Image (cartoon, rainbow over all chains, first blue to last red; front, top):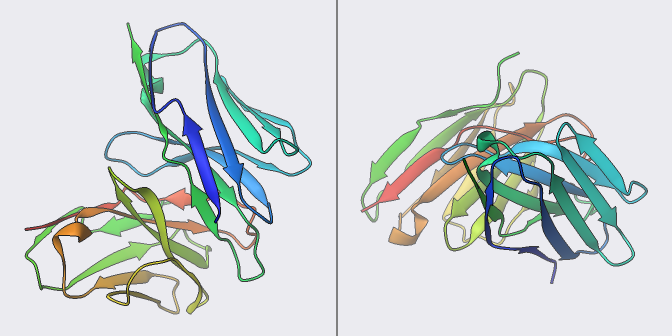
Amino acid sequence: KNQVEQSPQSLIILEGKNCTLQCNYTVSPFSNLRWYKQDTGRGPVSLTIMTFSENTKSNGRYTATLDADTKQSSLHITASQLSDSASYICVVSDGGTAGNMLTFGGGTRLMVKP
Amino acid sequence: KAGVTQTPRYLIKTRGQQVTLSCSPISGHRSVSWYQQTPGQGLQFLFEYFSETQRNKGNFPGRFSGRQFSNSRSEMNVSTLELGDSALYLCASRGLSTNEKLFFGSGTQLSVL
């Protein structure tokens, strides 16, 4: 069964600090891994998409890494801001022939305090 | 370019009723997918439509159904509502490639009493 596990479940950091969120997956076959940011009451917004051949991708203060051998990904947030308070969801696509089957992680809830 | 639009934003229904939710994708996007999000289960894939055809279906009972129109707009229907159907229902659209990012709407918050 395809699974995506995220850790920690929740995290509190002070504004200006860095943090790293983890994602482990058992999805086969693998097509791509995505990180989304979801503000409370809103739909998720895409941060990064990485395919098998990519091991790092940045989007402003967000940097995602992918180790396809160990099936692990991380999302590093640099110099956190209050607006980074949100849930961060790791999503893996199995790239099946039928289309785009996505498996979602449970998310990490990040709170940035002043 | 307008984003993904979902209506209504909030909905309150009682057990046994049925509900229809609507989703208008980004102009030019032909793929629309639906998701259920609850605090306990997180985000779960319901189904995906492409050019009016259902391409994928998640593990949900037959009470959950959908369709897509020729203009790519999509509707999702839930019949015989149960308390456990209370959730945020999100739709997303994307371009042609399965590697393209999904653009989500703000969702419909459904409460079943």
